[in-house]
Every structure is written in C-alpha cells, then in structure tokens.
Image 1 (cartoon, rainbow, N blue to C red):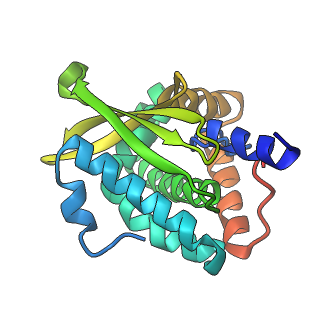
Image 2 (cartoon, rainbow, N blue to C red; image 1 turned 135 degrees about the vertical axis):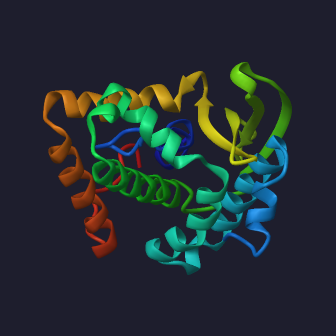
Length: 220
C-alpha cells in the first residue's frame, strides 16, 4: 500500500469524532421518519447519508457538507446525552446557560468532524451485521465499513430511547469507545484548565472552520 493508501486507511480507523485537539474527535426529507424507526433503521439512515455525502464531496464546500449532514446527525444521535457524558461530574457544577453553551458547541463540533472525515469516496460501503439487546434497555447494532481494498473497520453502535425514539449514544470502532475517549478529552481538559478555557478553545476552532482556516485534521 502506498503513502496515500496508508493515509486513507488510518483515516478510517481513526474517524470517530472524539479528540478535541486532533479531531481524531444529505438528509433527505424523510430524515426524521427514518431516525424514528428501529435501531437498525437509525444506523442505516446515518450510514446511507454518510456515503451520499462522500459521493457528493467533490462538488461541495466544507460548509455545504456540514449543512447537508447536520440534520441527519442531529436526528440519529443523542448529542445532549453525549455532551453531558463527556464532561462527567463537571456537568453538575454548570449553570443552565453554560450547559446549553457547551451542548451547542459540542454538537457543531461533532457535525464538523463527520463532515471532515467523510470527505471523499473510493468505493467504501457499510454493512449491518447484527443487533442485540444491550444493558439499560439499549440496543447494540454491529456494522462494518468495507473499504475499497476489501479490508473492514468494525463500527458498533449503542442506541437508547429518548423521547420515544432510538438514538445513537456511542460508537465503538475496533474496540475503542467513543464515549470513553470523549470523557478523557473534554473532562480532562477542564481539570487541567477550566470550563471557560474549554469553551474558548472549542468556539475558536469552530470559528476557524467557518472561516476556512482550520488546522489540518490529524492523520490526514
């Protein structure tokens, strides 16, 4: 495999929107209806939208990719829960305004990371393998990303019901938990600095992406 192939392989292995600093951190009209289906339907809807975004990437700016992916990511993920989990005990000490500020920035950052990772297409496809009941009333959907060379990356989704709808709360890629990495990054940053420093860093990075001056994504 050449250098370009190794770079692409690394990108897929580390695509999860988990790392704060390296960011290792096309919704059709039926998006909400699809997200309101069973666990496998929710995951399939997300993955179909990601492939569509990859195919359309050459004709879209980064901002357009973010705009097209935002509705399906918001519909299929429980972003407020994931944001809450990422801060751990720190969440309890925040005001309602600070919680809302963090959830808003965290959600935009998650969308931006998906848009950056799924930015080109060379024959990749997703395949759902199975689903099973998980603890606390959840459901686990096991899938793989099949790359153009036939190699696979495991992506296991954990979903729970929120307001009567199944939503993704975690993705485990090759045995690595997205939630665990998010907790380590975000809560760890606040412990080393403080909450305002975290928000300033997040908002500065989001502003840089809007202006098109964001630093290159790690591993790309």
